[in-house]
Length: 384
Ligand SMILES: [Zn+2]
Ligand SMILES: [Zn+2]
Image (tube, rainbow, N blue to C red; front, side):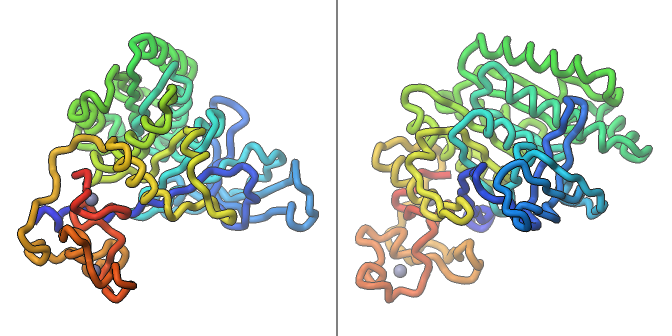
């Protein structure tokens, strides 16, 4: 059954807040002072702000935690950095877990770019939808090149990288940015921006780094050509680790919501770790929890918004129609993998009667039985 092979998606929606006070142990990226520095990733270990109650320009310390930079590596050095200016610290939001995708929103471009850079790890594949003139693309490439350099210091890593380069898949080692835009003038500008960035750094980089294997730019509209967009972003069988979405325009909200949904459906079998979105209008629509900027209702809101406007992406695999709901296979809730998803709720035209009559059904009514994305039932599932 195809349901058994579908992973269990968890979408964890957050709004980035620069006003949020950083707490002890928060993961952060320290923006470097020069373009040739990679910038440290670590956790806050000291906040003098609390002690002295100074709102701005406080000293903060963080460790340089390598396990955050590369999840499989457990080297944690106790290298401490004191940061004088608050603006140099960028929160890292993604949760290192196989089935959680963090959906991170910000209304403005400056924060969008910083968040994109801060979340890149060594070897990541990044899909940027709406690269425009390539400013964000170049910043991501810079970070990839510097991470590659940092990770190619020892002999073992050097031979691993060289071997990968010989096979023509050095991006598997170094990372890769794939940029989409719909305008051809944007392609040229982005290509130029990437070339400039690469040339500026090339004297300091390992020999095997090549711009052509670490980046590709495409003029494509994912809505008009969803299959083409999928195959361009999954070449060499590697799905994106990070997806960046910045598609403004006069119907921003429609475009952004459809694109988020397209990403969720298209990469469902191997979801990105984090989706970072710049959208003033989407941020205005959603109301985050004041403590941590999380939004538990956002996924349901998204599905309802798309359904009400008939904006779902046309996708191939719709759920089957069953003569009786109990003909559908038993599928468990992604929450605990133990509680069955209510099949009447998902497949009966009247839904689950017990659930409607006041919560007496103890089965799961939150997740879709077909795609396991919360917020809709299989009968209304946009497909996978
Ligand atoms: Zn039920
Ligand atoms: Zn569904």
